[in-house]
Image 1 (tube, rainbow, N blue to C red):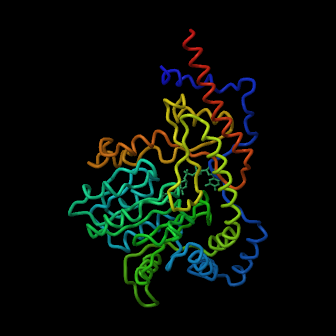
Image 2 (spheres, rainbow, N blue to C red):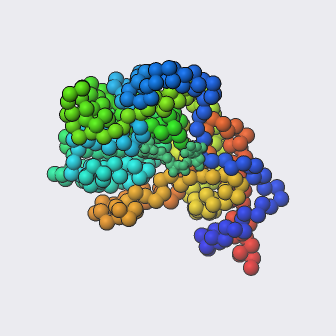
Image 3 (cartoon, helix red, strand yellow):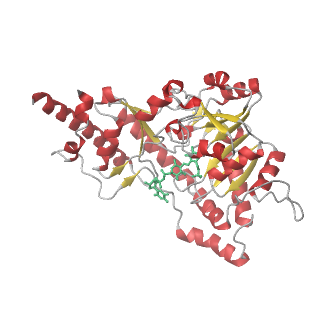
Length: 405
Ligand code: T4K
């Protein structure tokens, strides 16, 4: 009965007396951290002086060094975006055949495998972190498996110990998609120090960004040298092409933006922490809404504010909430719906069945990413939480009205 009445969502969109006032301007799931234009101009002047616009110039080298220190990793290579970085990591490690991965991610993760001629094999996720569950690895391994591609979803770290043990048992390489995990730490170690290679995305929607950009982090200097060759057409020195590479180089302009953004990252992070705490306090008192749990002993990157909506306890589905919040000018995202295993290009894979992926199949119907960025205030978060509660109250009124009819 409740589910049927929840479908009457247009009725909820008229704001009853006492309901929160919609925002004047759209509030999006995220906004990029923008440095002052004057700080960027300083870097641009240096670029104009040298006339070096790309191909590993001074800005690039400065950003690479600064991020190596910031992330606490031994080796780092900047890229034009995270997806090209991921494809390069797969090639650098020589993966082939099948790779075990999560269905609960952005399309770039399995697509990077498919572009490399590899079959993604979906394994289920952990019910709390929503990251690849090491418990499923053993039964998914075949004689064609060459690696694991795990994602630190929403910046919460995977079970890096469990996954490494599973990888060691089967002699598999591990690539971590750390697109969301800039600054995530596990027992004080940078997230990029785990596995064989980690990929970071520096897209405009990320905590740290270069408009478009990404990086690969690893410990092995030989692997870094191979990655750098592959990133530059396979060119190794003036007279040698040693591999079938691509063009993944970050330009000087993007690197310059990154240097400016990095200066503001501590302030951005501090504000996001405060906002996340506020969401947590407020939702602790709302039945059916649960904030994603932090992982013990880890620092989260504060990339997203994620809630799970339990339809029965809350009173309406995640989808209704997502739609209704738009009437308040709040634009949430259902990352990562639909599940990658449900895309047309993957649904016929034997590993793509809902029966193989029960935890991910449920989670993808419940998760909702709420606005989180440094430009918001705690009172903005209060208003958003009031709107969530108002949607629920509207549903309850509808249910009561429906029952009285
Ligand atoms: N692996 C994972 C797990 C990933 O999540 C991603 C990317 C990748 C790999 C691949 O990394 P990259 O190749 O992208 O480096 C966004 C991003 O495009 C994508 O980078 C990101 N994950 C994904 C989770 O989110 P959309 O389609 O949701 O973005 P969009 O344009 O709808 O932006 C969301 C909101 O952000 C907008 O409503 C407003 C705001 N926004 C966005 C942009 C682009 C701005 O205020 N300014 C902007 O410039 O994919």
